[in-house]
Amino acid sequence: MKVDNFRLKLGGKEYVPIIVGGMGVNISTTELALAAEKLGGIGHISDAEAGYVCDSIFNTAFVSTKRKRYLDNIGNPDKSAVQFDLGEVAEAQKKYIEHTVSKKSGNGMIFLNCMEKLTMNNSIETFQTRLNAAMDAGIDGITLAAGLNLRSLDLIKDNPRFRDVKIGIIISSTRALSIFLKRALRIERLPDYIIVEGPLAGGHLGFGPDDWHTYDLKTIFLEVLELLRKENLDIPVIPAGGIFTGTDAAEYLSTGAAAVQVATRFAITKEAGLPYAVKQEYINAKEEEIVVNMASTTGYPMRMLLSSPTLRYAIRPNCEGLGYLLENGGKCTYIDAYYAAMAEKKPGGQLTVKEKTCLCTGMANYDCWTCGHTTYRLKETTNLLPNGKWQLPKAEEVFLDYQFSTDQAIMLPSPESC
Ligand SMILES: Cc1cc2nc3c(=O)[nH]c(=O)nc-3n(C[C@H](O)[C@H](O)[C@H](O)COP(=O)(O)O)c2cc1C
Image (cartoon, rainbow, N blue to C red; front, top):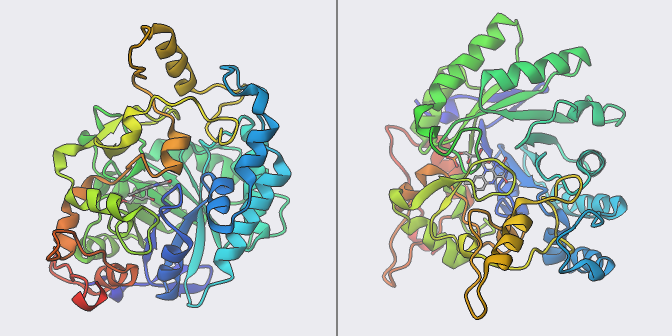
């Protein structure tokens, strides 16, 4: 039994049922998404901190322009005045997405991972702008993630591509799904696919730091299938989180999954955005070094390596330039933690910020090493080189391993590609 025996059917077309999940900020790069698309699967890019990502790819100046605009506010704990210019948000989004979709060369698709928790001090208008700009730029699909907003579909219902672009949601419980479906049925626009993300995934989680291990993907996945059957709804269901081998994936496909979404194994590929040294950290990680904590300012638990530099950050909040996680009204729990630490700091003492981290800066600098639980198994997927470093596989090699491997085997990258 292998993945290649199955196909994902979406909008009358067939795809290899492997979806590379979105990994912000720019871990799932254009190149990574295109590798999946070229092989007939689906690759996500993420629009997390799109202005910052554009600056690093195209040499634009979205971040410095915004910082200059609010220069006088740097050092002020009140960030309520710091707003994104919606024209610039749309421009960055279009630039990044057009750049990616214009390079498509296969029969697959490019989707956008769009996290609703990027509240940008104006959650509704910035989100609406991001979604509409993505559709205008020709994205094939949008996966609504982290913080699922019931009004999402209403925000884009006037876009001419509303019924043509594929729209999916990520949920971690039947409860969240039922609530979303009620609203979707009311406006007669059901999601085109449902990603069921279990407790072993990377990034933000729909499970608590203390109870995630009491849940399992298989159970939630079967509950979702049952709910859809009862409601007489035929929507492709795509499990995600901890699907490590082609055999794991094929097992889900044979129990009713339309496709699988995977990410951890692709995070260390040559095409992924993490720096070389960080990819080595991921591969070297031990299971006990992978933790779920509440350091993210989104209020959601997040999985990361304990050695993430961002966990030791004591930097001044960088909201004038970034500010992607500012809640409406300009609040962020890192700002509170930072200024509380400043108030407690003894003269000449070291500044230590407790519990929260500046996630905008940490993710932008690749200092927040978010990862899936199975990261400790990445050693099984590649070769140790004579210089003591791990070989980085190509995305194509990982994709083909998922597609064709059987019996829990993992195809190692070919040594020639070192
Ligand atoms: C490094 C990394 C970063 C991630 N970032 C995001 C993200 O920005 N948004 C999101 O919705 N999911 C994110 N995820 C979750 C993945 O898209 C995916 O659903 C999940 O990790 C799949 O499980 P696996 O990593 O065990 O294969 C991330 C996962 C990893 C490994």
